[in-house]
Amino acid sequence: MTDVHKSCSFLLEPWLEFHDLLAKHPHLKRVLFDPVTGLPTAPLLFPRIESLLEERGEVSLLCLNVMKYSRIEEIYGWEIFDEVMREVAASLERITGFELRDTDIVAELMISGNSLVVLLSPPRTTDGMQRDALDALARRIESLVREDLASVLDPSIFPKFGCYVGAATMLRDDNVRLERLVHMALEAALADSDLRECSDGECRKRRLEQIIQAGDVRTLVQPIYRLSDLSIIGYEALSRGPEASEFERPDKLFKVAYDSDLVVRLERLCRHRAFESAATLPEGRLLFVNIEPEAVADPELRDIMLSSVVAESNMAPSQIVLEITERTAVEDFVAFRATLEYLRALGFRIAIDDGGAGYGSMQCIAEVHPEWLKIDMSLVRDIDTDDVRRALVATFVTFAERTGVKLIAEGIERAEQLYVLREAGVEYGQGYLFCAPQTPFPADADVTPAL
Image 1: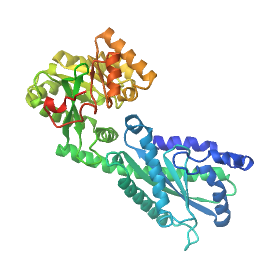
Image 2: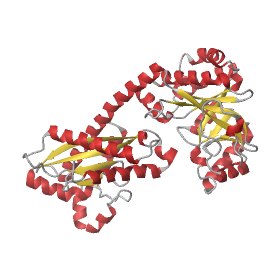
Image 3: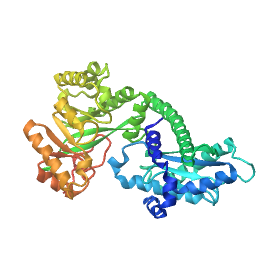
Image 4: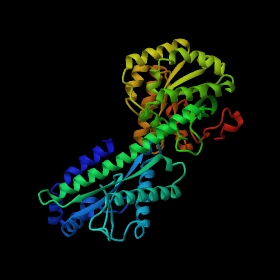
């Protein structure tokens, strides 16, 4: 059972007694419509379900789950996820009267959730809904909604979502409360959608294995600037999967890698590509290379890091900053620190990514004692208008001054953010205000903004 399924099951429990409550207090209905999609929530389906069970003895339904493949709200803001849910609801509305009948009812499972319910009207040609026909309908709805989303969502956003439809039929049972029958049917439909997602997961794992086997990963770089004069002090190496594919973005690439136990293999390939690109790194510049926490435990990391740098890039370790990402928590800090200290002894420097966000960020900073610390874009995003974010960044500046850590602000997109960061004392930064990721290595004149 997935986390989404568990949370939905937990939230379904309070429906017990809800039917009677609505009957006694009909004014509650107006607060049971989702503000994003405008759809009713599932408790409002109960009268129709009760009526169908009395008339037909059974009711069939579909559950459409919208899965997020990356940190959507954190990276793009909650508005993007709301947009997706509105488009899913609109897609179901567009196919009502075609694949769905006018008498089918579409609802949200719960307010501001990620699952929709379709209460199906009775079949026209048979006494009951046949399972094969129900499954075929679920697959058609799933395919149509995916096609619709692909046509209306930004191509960079669409691959970050999955859409899976599960189906179930509930039978009348006078010994079981209506709410319990609905609960069990929705759990069965959610479990069915989970199976669909798991099946897709196996396909994604095979595709990622093919990518790794073919070495189909490329490196882009993004400059890191001294904010006072916008001089370039280094570049971050950014891994990308096959262009225009669902694996192009690193968040999807590594999520599938973690789900499929392929992190170490993928990390080795990305590191290899980054060091290859570093052969043309401009003199005097640093190269920031992302390292996953799980990859720090790679038994080959200690042995191959120095030889890889020399063989593939002809760089000195002192030019390379190993940037520890925070996609997962560090479970064994003793072993983690031992590996990092070994790499430090070879001359590498350490950075912590996503400062102020992620899994145990503050503990990681305290345990690792990095030379560099990146302030997460979630703190930078509204720093010019948000006093709390400004105060948090000021705390990082004070910490950096006392410990000698160098701060880099990530995700700078507006001149107003740059002004506040300079005033706060943040010395370095990167972001789309200055330069989007480029192929290695752009000329300084091409990536030095006139601000």
